Amino acid sequence: MKFLYCRRKKNKSSHYWVCKHKNHNIVENALDPNDIHVPLTEYQILSMQFLKKVKIRCSTEDTGSNKIFEDEVNQLFEKLVTDTDKQEMALMIPHFYSVKAGLQKRS
Image: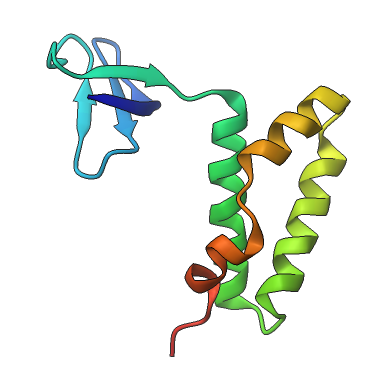
């Protein structure tokens, strides 16, 4: 199996990783040899942070989720410098309609 991970915290003696696979915490030097862990790319991390920010804004603001999604996309692309970065991020960010159901407010 292949999982994606990013570092959560670091102590003097070990690194703790967070895996995208649910309930799968990793401590360095204690990896299951059957699991191959691939580090997240910068674009994957930005994409995850983008979705998290959109979800938080959708749950706290009265603005429509499509407007919030559009605003966050525009802010993200303003921060990116090169056209290559913008193209890579465009591939990583899901379309609004594929995440729309997860962005709706719950009462």
